[in-house]
Image (cartoon, rainbow, N blue to C red; front, side, top):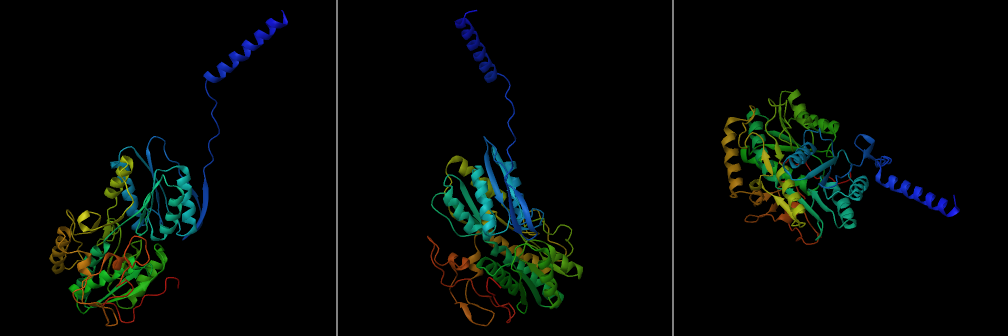
Amino acid sequence: MSAKRLFSLCSMLMLMSLVASACGPATPGPTPTPEVLTVTGFAGAQQVVIPEPVEGKTSVAFVYVGPIGDGGWTYAHNQGRAYLEQNGENVHTAYLESIPEGADSERVIRALARKGFDMIFTTSFGFMDPTETVASEFPDIAFVHISGFKKNDKNFGNVFGAMEEMKYLAGMVAGARAKADGSNRVGIIAPWPIPEVIRLSNAAALGMRKTCSECTMDIRWIFTWFDPVKEREAAESLLGAGATVVITGADTPGPVQAAADRGLTGIAYDSDNACKGLEKNCLTVPYWSWGPIYVDLVKRVQGGTWKPEDYYGGTQDGLLGVYGFMEGQTPYESVPKEVIPEVQKVLAQMKSGEFDRFDIFSGPISDNQGNIVIPAGTSLTQSDLEGLKGVAGREDCTICMNYLVEGFDSVAEIPPQNP
């Protein structure tokens, strides 16, 4: 065989080999190594596996501050996520739970953005600044922060609602119960000394005074959203000081359980499921229904019509509820019968728009030291309610939410944010 023919044969064999390699079955590549971050929160250091988006679907990630089994805030958001999966079109969702606020949350949010999620919801107040930072780095991803007040003009908005309306109704129930108990004393657990918590606590105190003008509200600050031990200890302290009703602003039903252990009553928060198993000692639950707004926001992102906004929903929007008084629900057995029609009347006014958060904080209102803080004929603005100053695009508050209203014990005070 000539050298020329031998070269041609070898060349043909090499070409056939390449064709066979290209057309034959591919050899599976190595499985990508999951990205794992270590964060330090309530339960100490934990490893967090960053989930993957799904190609061909709108991939939406949720960042939670507590565990999905907390029975409150995070449970309600996860209900909303499940609702989105069931009712959204071509949607994939993923979540990360028990993510601490601060630097760790920024690392987690950034990791989700790098993975290529189309939309990221961050669901705790302390996630606001980290979300703002990451949103500026990934302009093609939609970011929505729950409970804050910051946004930009391109890809970062915020969502919250007038929970003060439901807390006002809950306060009415608590006041009636304390009056029926003969104690005239209600206790409330406050997570952080920020305008949101102060606003909701004040609304509860004003509602309490509507049904029990002689009632006094005691308060305990716990400096955490989720800590079952601290929540329980705060409840025990309030009950030990004479409260026969305890209201929680934190994430678990533990304070209601503490009241139940003494044969007393409590009011849970955040989830319509919060008092499951505690029905005999639970009075009501102000709760959130996040699912519909999640579906609406994702649909707008999919359709290219979403724009960042300061969204603050009310009772009329269906974002809020107070358990036992919404359609199809029955008040718990510990609710005094005489207060039921009163609550139903005010709730109907809220649904119709006749009475809202601004009416709750309409003067004259004094603080718990007897000083007029909201003069007669004056109502708070939205910036007053949120305690906003120096926020781009928002007016500054003039009667900023930094006081406790009449109804609180005169020794109660708002501590510094970092005790």
